[in-house]
Length: 302
Image 1 (cartoon, rainbow, N blue to C red):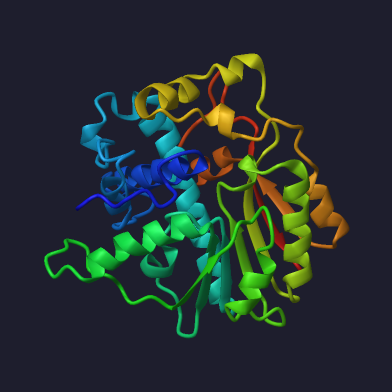
Image 2 (cartoon, rainbow, N blue to C red; image 1 turned 45 degrees about the vertical axis):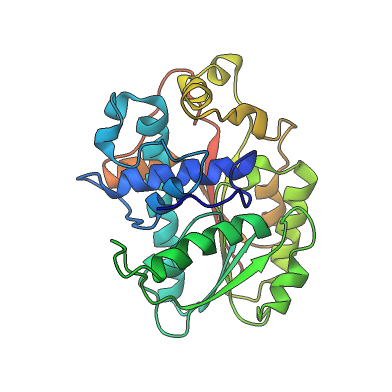
């Protein structure tokens, strides 16, 4: 695919969206894949920052032993599957409104089997969404494209920075605060200042009708010095030039889980390893583990 100009994914946190897309592309082609995203590789090939990255398992010389595309890549594959299941379960129980906060290059609006009447709001910075739409538009207009564009539900793109006012643009897109909503913040809170994380959750609560559900990923801290020296971080710097530790907000994390409890949400906290055991694949604990402080939080508003 012809590379696009830089529209928000070539530097900073934007590059991490490409990193996750590459991991999803690799996961898609694994014989024991947990999740499939046939669009992911097209984002990787369209950006100058990632055009040389692997998108197939056999393009990773060390396979699962590679700290970045093996272990961390499998983490992203597992996370994708678990959060796909979360959203589809919400839809199956009648929730017809989804909000993806920090939607990045995810294509759930296209690749998941949504029921009739589903609405998916994608909230992210304008540059990221413009890059995404440019790549998807090229696929839709290319009769020789190997990936046909699947019919999407009512996808509504909301160009807004989640660190500032995003509720106003979301409401302007047709969001209905009187209807139950499935909220998802995947790979987002790790990069936000503590006060922004808490403000985002309070805003979600303000906009959530009874029956709404929420899933998000949080990193309780950066761990010990030894865990910060984990090969995952070194591999990201050396192989793709992404310094994850520099991108993470390094201040002490707020008690977002406690906040949700005070707001009367029913909260369940799981580790990635809980789901790795459930699915029989995914990352396992290791010494000085870079993933040891990662938690996946699921909440429901009665």
